[in-house]
Image (cartoon, rainbow, N blue to C red; front, side, top):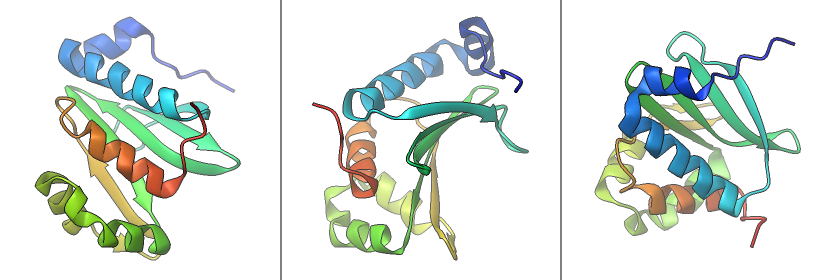
Length: 137
């Protein structure tokens, strides 16, 4: 298997200093709450890299990187969407808008965020806890 994990320097050059800091803070936040297997992949057509958090064959979330852009994706299935809908007022207007504007596929809503700061991190933690209860702490 080819290791496509980028070096620190490659990530820094790709997404820039600010987003690299946000990337690291987001990873630290996820790692603080979840014990997961992390897998690097090519990012498909739209992204250069994908960094997936998985456990037991199920994906919790994925981070994506491309030039000057960081992506954070959470996929909510039918039951998970119902949980979000029940508590949607607990989320920021921005998260509600992104959720509402995301197409629903047969296997769920593939919600992509492109954070430029840490302001949505509390919402991200809540979204992840809909998918899976934190297994650390």
